Length: 164
Image 1 (cartoon, one colour):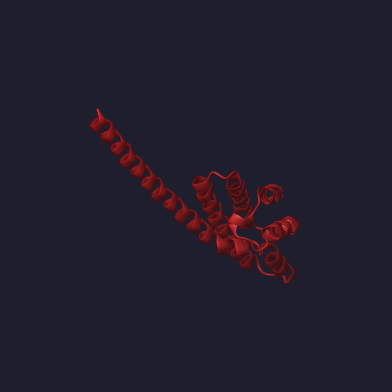
Image 2: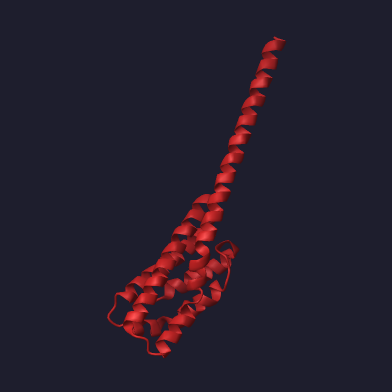
């Protein structure tokens, strides 16, 4: 009987060690995914955080529609990258703020794509410039992981106000 009990204790210890090892390995994979998604979002976040000022400059200096469309395409690509990276972060962490951020970036992506395809991008940009500049203020040089839930909700609310 003592041998059976000793064997059961040894098996439980081995199983416990194995499960702990697997959990640690999985946690490390999730950490790597989070680091990757955060790094992936750094440059697009910086570029979109400057969108309001850049678009205002281009409009004030009477940039051609082709130049505006090229810039809008760049912002569309950045918003799409941020949408994907925040979705990765949401899946990895389950944090609701990343889902809200993803939705806000989807709104921005749709706005940039729609305006880019319009015959009068300058007019629509002028009408929405204040909102874009407010989004710019909210994004002000942060990493995607630094945003609070309240800041993300504000970005989402602003992105939902864009009219195109």
